[in-house]
Image 1: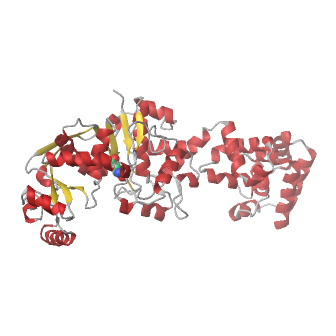
Image 2 (image 1 turned 90 degrees about the vertical axis):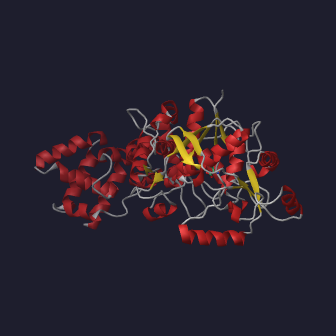
Image 3 (image 1 turned 45 degrees about the vertical axis):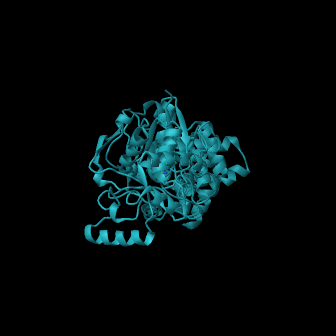
Length: 494
Ligand code: GLU
């Protein structure tokens, strides 16, 4: 049997990290099992549809490199892959359900339902349209078939609801939570077909999973409460159920509550893979490598038994195993995400980092110099956390410091800075840069001054602060003349 999985987003806005993780886990499972990864657009709720989201979903998945095998863009034989185009398919199955008496017509007016809802919420805290109160409402269970047909023929608006029999134990299986038992009294007679004749999520989702021969449903835990409804539908149709895997929630860093757009806004991290409009940056724009983003989100709720948690997509695929997915929510940690990114950047090949550096830094792009790019890339690679750090890290090689770090200046000003700078300039002028360190050391011994202060002065002149990569290496990249100029500049500030 060929494993077929699907990612089934609703195009109601951008994909959240949770959505990307669901897509990723589907992709991983498909690849691991040499199966097929389907992308189905669940646009049954046309009112909530946001036009640009479909394209956004494709662009996000493409950036992440988790491309579907079947979708609206590359259809297989199970199409259409957009629910709004599958109405004819649904019609047949709606009829079947009504014939089987698994569903009934409900003629209730929206106002009547909201009055009932308000009253129930006041009295019991919740409203459920089900076995306990369905005879108080206006539905086909209370009238003859003839009357029902007449009302339909006269054009009266109706919905179709699932007929949930009372007091039945509904048993569902989930790969992570194992057997999930729910008494049917807790359920609602869910609306399966809306007033406009189109199916709701529950019905369309189950019919599509069946018709598309989906073998494993992998989705977020927020869909677990829908599982008994789906189980009932499978039972009514007499269809074989797919395997279900409900992934743990992604919690905000405090562990209290789901990770939301608001958390991201408040704490300065993206919750979307790529930018959504002008307003929201994505991981791509923040300077994350797609490989690192995937590596991090793969481990939100999954703890692989591996020695090195920094993994390529192929390593992730081969390690992937549902048995290592946790039940409890996974806490999001932006610092960890950045660390993972840094690790991935450190593992880029020379060629890869050089390509990125030359693309990110205008001066290097415009005056292409392979040797310079290569030297700079080697020196900064281990310091890059986000790709957007690159222009800043390259500045020291391209322009004199814009300012000198105040604390550092206080430290080096303990000596006569003007004469020390003159001495350093003399050493640099007189020797090859290859011997610079040794010459400085000799000078320090002869004049009985600490090597530290000399090196710090040199560093301050060249990069404007007392931290950064090996200063001798930086000087070798920028050359003698530039170093001398920068020493002179520092001297002028004294
Ligand atoms: N359309 C649902 C969503 O937006 C899909 C849920 C499922 O995978 O069954 O997440």
